[in-house]
Image 1 (cartoon, helix red, strand yellow):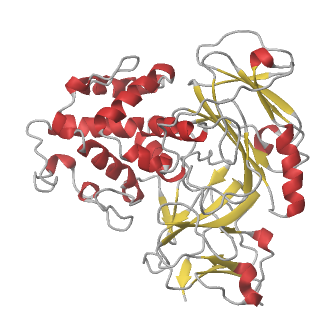
Image 2 (cartoon, one colour; image 1 turned 60 degrees about the vertical axis):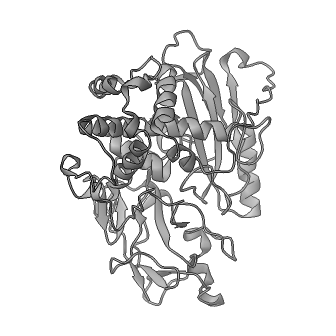
Image 3 (cartoon, rainbow, N blue to C red; image 1 turned 90 degrees about the vertical axis):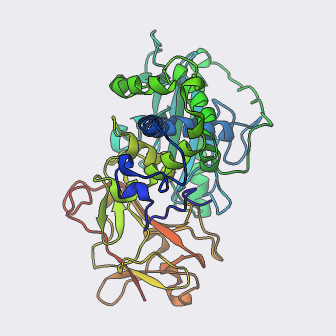
Length: 474
């Protein structure tokens, strides 16, 4: 999949990135005849960006839950997916997956009744179980950093629920009916550690409140053959025309209400037929806009690589501390959805991403690169860190040693001065250096540095006292 349907690249943004939309000529818009509707067209792309997270969450939910019983990376609504090994290069359900933790996840609907999540004693192991609402905000995140590693039980309630919970259960109220539990348990990937984490996963439980404390057998899921189970979710969202997109968004907003702070923005969208709680009125949308709105809307989302002031660019690594909770920053919310759905709060994880080397050139798999950490300057974290390799569409890269990320668990070899080099290239650097090798594809690629529970003490990436080293071509 190309990142943009108008050949938008990360290093060379579309015309929308460099000029005000109101100044674009008809020729610059590819021949689209907007007439007097320029303002409405811009408004419609605003609405597209606003709804992108909710629509993407729903399409992700459909694919992940469209099975009769839990299998692999999928499970019916209300049932836990317990990944037993890291995702591989065939995984396409979620962009930018990780290969450091075993996911324990579930989609469930709290519109009818609360659901109860029970987490076992994690025995000091690093874990976090963030809960995302339909708009991709992390509304709660039990885990080692926030709630410790002892046994804990939570009732996730819907926006309109009120009632009494059994003793010993803490309430977490979701702002929307859709909830995505995106649990991660750290695992070294050895057979012994896989076994230990599997035992912890099997002790995690998710049941409706009416069945809590009773024998419970989840019902089989209903499989919808009309759902595309092969195409990547982002492609499925991006191929919708504006009528289909806004119709789905309007339906979703009935049970997943926007936040109160969104009211001024929503008042504007009524002009194009999008009103919370009502069906989409397609008669108010200019028919000439239908195909172009998604194209331009997605271009504007991806233009955030260059335009968003919250994105820091240090030594070719771009990152932000504005993930997980977005407020009214709709472009940032949509941008994170597009490149890394399910991102955590910055206190839990920072995700510096690099698309260019120290010389400012896009990574090319025909070249060799080195990333050097000076002595005692590995990423400062209290959880874990890793550097992950992705192709141009943020998916894992197939390679002969099935290594998708590199971290301290590879027993990295140090240089004589105590520094550590990571070798980023297509072919092995040799048996003696293979522990420090992150395999690359033959074509373009992207790197992501994961820093879970980043240190808040000096040095820290959060305050800029620790700097990410550049990746240099050999």
